[in-house]
Length: 42
Image (tube, rainbow, N blue to C red; front, side, top):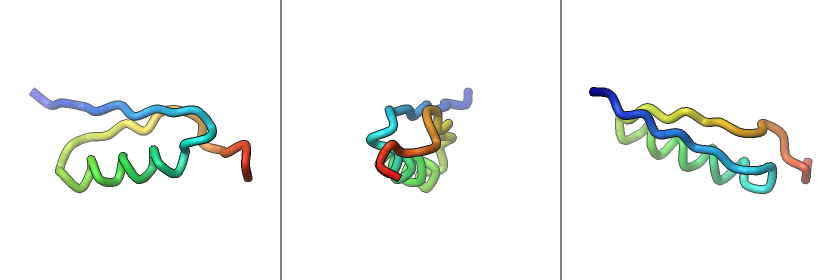
């Protein structure tokens, strides 16, 4: 059974979500990075 970790956030935490998704992937788990792809601060 494959476990998939779904990560989501609002526009304010896009960078944190990317960091978490990378760390999850480094642990050989599948991470699905859902949510907005642009920041309101860009």
